[in-house]
Amino acid sequence: MAYRETDKVRARKRTVRDAILGAARDRIAAGGYAAAQIQAVAEDAGVATGTVYRYFDSKADLCAEVFRSVVRHEVDAVDAAAHGTGSPAQRLRAVVETFTRRALRAPRLAYALLAEPVDPLVEAERLLFRHTYARLIRDVLADGIAAGRFAAQDPDLAAAALVGALNETLVGPLSPKPDTPAYDHPANDAAADDLVEGLTAFCLRAVAAGRSTS
Image (tube, rainbow, N blue to C red):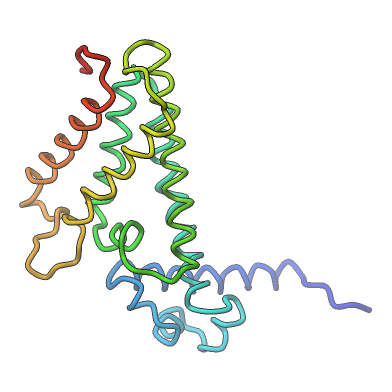
């Protein structure tokens, strides 16, 4: 008779896999991808090093799965902002603010998602991540163009440009430089507010139809 996994065995495997992913995520959030060494992740997860390789082929495979799991939460938050209530300008404002503030609240993890040099397997996930954000912004822009609230333009091109502007602008503030205060520190709330407002104003000006976007 062929071996068939029981529900208990499957549940245990999910628990072990989740523990490994959680340990890897915590290490990336604290020190970037370089900190997510397989042996260290295994120790944090309470498993043997060989156990990690039973679930993930390599460090790159593990990091790519961490990337996917984190991005799902980020995309859900931005999706809610993009398809929420309000005018297209209000929704675009919500998208920019959501994206930026969530990044600033977890700067080391956000830097890993957006800009840290990575294995090609993770880089491929990063490109999908950027395309997903561009599609969400494209929906907002298309609605604004149809309503005459945004300038007539190619919404796909404009959305890609805005995603590029957001990512590039955040690289500096998120970069893990030891002499740079973290934006998530209470003393830097004003700086974070200025950054969010500046990015929002730029994005709204970039698509404005020659009228107020407030």
